[in-house]
Image 1 (cartoon, rainbow, N blue to C red):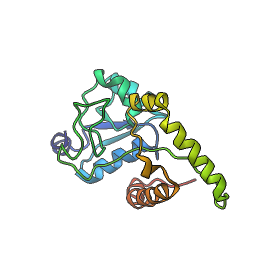
Image 2 (cartoon, rainbow, N blue to C red):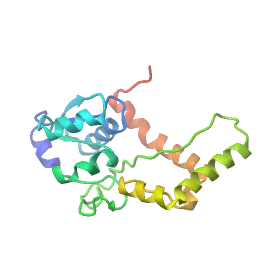
Image 3 (tube, rainbow, N blue to C red):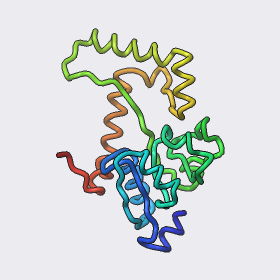
Image 4 (cartoon, rainbow, N blue to C red):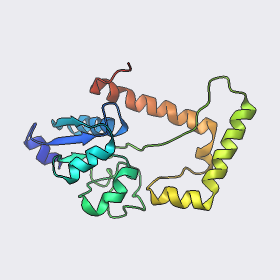
Length: 183
């Protein structure tokens, strides 16, 4: 795919869920890493982008696993930008396996509270989140959707702070390269 789009500058297009969205920035990151010039087609949400891909109006999309998993049977999936293969897509190689180890774009969710929230409140929120992630029904559903669940060490406020700092360092140059600004 990389050789094909490099050999045909501007011929191929990609869609995403909106300017500044995770799917947009993941594609920008991919293009930055491989130096592949392509046409950018923004949509208002991942659903319309997926519909355009399935309707063969787009050449490819970069999207979160949750949006792709239901369509895996209908798509040619090149890589997952995760450290390990996904249980929901075990035949799809990781970006490292495909020769692009730097292409890591793992979506994540967290619960945040305003700065200055008392520690006891943060601890209660953290305990509630950890209890939810320990629930077998919740775990099963998240895994079915292609989500990865952090281990216990990764479910702490300190781990989240470190993760956020690393993500800011990683994504700031990508956001600047995309020309995305806050309004």
